[in-house]
Length: 168
Ligand code: ZN
Image (tube, rainbow, N blue to C red; front, side, top):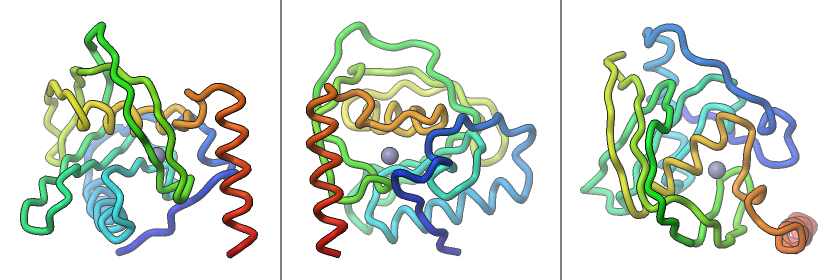
């Protein structure tokens, strides 16, 4: 089932999400609905607060091609290690439509999480996947990519968004 994606300045996007107690059938259904919603919106990641649910749940798929889909499901994900090196790539967000900016992130991160079966897993990611993970995990703490920008850049981005919305 496709869910509605909240956009700024919806206050839910600024709240901290709670840990999931158990990966039960409701959580699995939410993971699947979030994935469908993300694919339909042509996104590469989606966090539960973006669909109005304050639970620590994230889906990611950075494969652009239809025939190479590789969905990743993260419940209660935590970064347990990261590289010292940082990278600087362009990011966007389904909750901040059509706006992009460069954000500094760690090159590589190791996360611990529960998978779709409720099993504890660890995974190390680098490059674009590492960036997507850091972006989505931020959402679970009410943090958006624009928070990493300088005040001036953030202001300019929000102005562009406002103009775009006025044009419809
Ligand atoms: Zn986002």
